[in-house]
Image (cartoon, rainbow, N blue to C red; front, side, top):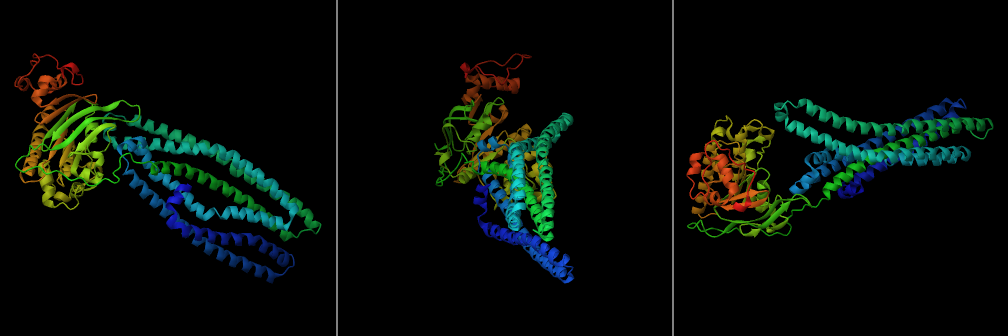
Length: 620
């Protein structure tokens, strides 16, 4: 908590001074109130003097008005401080989260990050507000009341010295057992957020498989688990108020008993006894409120540690001190110039320390204007491999280069403008088609947007929209079909003239005709760019369709993260058994019989195709 105050409380320092100062003035009036009441009883009521009662009543009224005025100022300062800090913390969290690499995001998890940026920040805001308003009031009121009571009568003051440690012992007993529960509560809130996110984002799948009951049961179990923890800590906390008020009331009884004897003996006045009771009540009530503040600050401390855990997480992928990379220019007359667009040099990557490699010792080089096809079974590392190109992850060993420069030497913004990625899962945000397409280049003209849509085979259905480019897009693109979402994400990647286009199985929802037309348009764009003297487009296509990658200049066959084959379609069909098995499972017999130089004949009619997930590496 202190770290957050130090980091974000600087510009609110004056509010954090003015607020407690105003509250301190209010507390001073609260401490003077019992003395004024004592004078009213002794000089007014005791002496049957109405004027004295009215006079002291007017003094009490004036003190109340002044105290309320300062309280309102303090409330204003508390609101400005807590809301301002909360806004700054949320902004800093969101900004920092967007700097984290996929590795850190995987470690924290999206539901946990959402809980931290909402619920945890709310807990900190509440603690800051109460800190400005109450942190001075109740401790100062407790100490001041005790000192004032002792000044009235030392004998009665001994009752304070007995009651206060008793209440302190109760606080220590309860809070020592409550603190671990508060940390558990936040972790269980993360679990509830995870289940909510999965159930709501996958509502269609849940209904398709009639799993509503299962999801309700999962949520109920998580909610009950969190509720049981909350009830346990609530039971412990509920002990505080009854016990403290019991001690306080016993103390008041003792004061009235002993004070009554002293009044009869003429050692104290009735007003002084009433003042002493008021001070006793203020002291013990203050201790109760201090205990409640401790509960709030304990929760806030647990939340602050979770917030600091994110803010102190150093991104593993940074581009500090990286100078802009000069892009090579291919000659307009020779698009096959030996300029390397992409290069993997014994690159390996694993998710976490001690985990098996998801990508293992990959080495390949792709010249400018060429197309690389990546194919392999599910879980073979295709998406992980292409994630190394724009530095969504960093290779653990080896290196990855773009345009002849190691990706670690690129400024991230420049690298990700040069490399456009179409993710495996089409992702659109609420807004319009135009606002989604201009992510890479906010100044893109309508002509550039329509050109990208034409290449992505999306212009027809956008033209059919009454509002065209300004047609609305719902959250996640739910008002578009899967194929339309994919084509829009492809068009978004093509805006801003990228030099490397990565399509991570992004045409899986397209029919074969549209897929072929898309690849043809991208190839034409690359050749045209080179012919016009610019940097041609280099394409990386990840797919499980042989028809999608067979025309690529180079095909990389992956098997459990390793390269099982590298070459053209004809070469791999001859030399790589895994690729041949994939072809035999997908292509028609006529297509297989047309292979040039096939080392193995096509399977006999009716013979089962070999599974695409196996590979005899001796034949690769």
